[in-house]
Length: 151
Image (cartoon, rainbow, N blue to C red; front, side):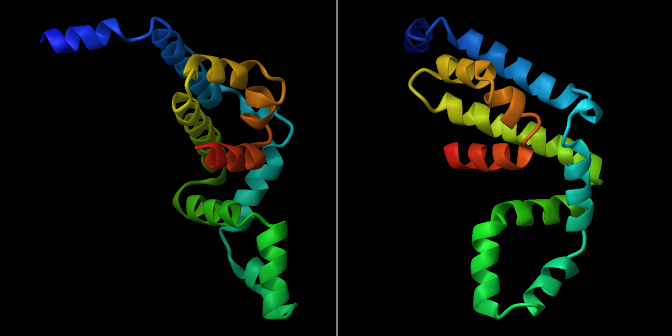
């Protein structure tokens, strides 16, 4: 019991700040009215198109296999294509976009938790103009890739 209390005493005072900021990010990311955001329709269309794989197979038929493989790996993010295809098979496109925004921000929070000063890292994510406001809410394709990379 005494060991547990001493470890609580060593717990930084700023940890509650981290959890408060993380909660705020997740609530805002999940509850924001996405219809007002610029790229919402593009991402919904992207998830609708991802339901069918023929577009990818059609592209494969138009080029030699090696050229197709190189262009798809370097021009289309493979992780994004797989993510959209799997998620579109499970939920409707609007929910898929909302879940992706929520997931990428949760992954970014998890990545900041692993730093030496997680409160500072999460605060930077929130306050940087190209952080949460842009990459975390609007440019979700790039935000998804960034959060996976940082985690």
